[in-house]
Length: 281
Image (cartoon, rainbow, N blue to C red; front, side):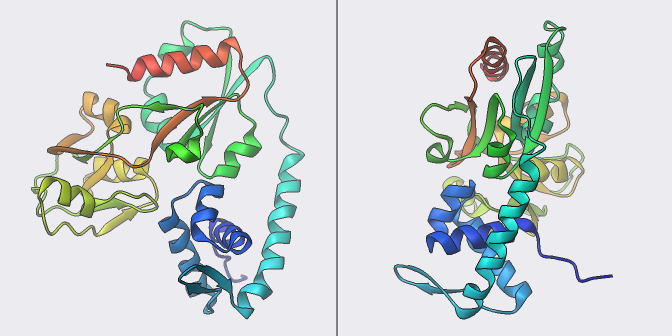
């Protein structure tokens, strides 16, 4: 059996960073935070056992190893893009295609979807779960629901609220917050340290890490600890008793979830209006 490859996301982060010579610019392009891009580059360097960039005060410079790797990675990503384009038929008049964050799909839309489909029996709905920025691009969906900053979402996107971070755990968790394992979502600007500083709680050191708020909630719901996650995602889980608040405090999130209509139609507008109404007070 051949040696396993590093994750594709690491190569995407490397290729974008190498083109821009900036983790910040790469993050804006591919829809991640700067810290997430930096972490993925570091992981790739560790895996390959070479330094790919020289970190400088005013940006980045490729090392010799980075220059050797870049053309190969760029060509591979281009071939993958060409290969997938042939299968992408794009939206049709008969089908409403909604590309959305996996976390939104699982924790917000799925529990409520019957309230949308039941009154619209003739509507064909296609849900695409997406994570990365180019996932949304190639999907060519009628409606997007993305996670990121306001700048990444664009001025025309509507923010889904509430956009606050709260501490959540299983109702069967018996340990107090100070003793329970803390679950951190990597690749976001907010974490337990900022939450603790805002509410006056010191010594919060996460020991379990997830790559999305949705996964953090899933881990918490199964009794693995306390997750700091989006209140938006937790609404149905709190109402149904899957999760409870581990602490009453909340802080505003620096990133959030945004919905935008790419191909205006009556069905796309209807879906957006329905979702906003579901999340309203």
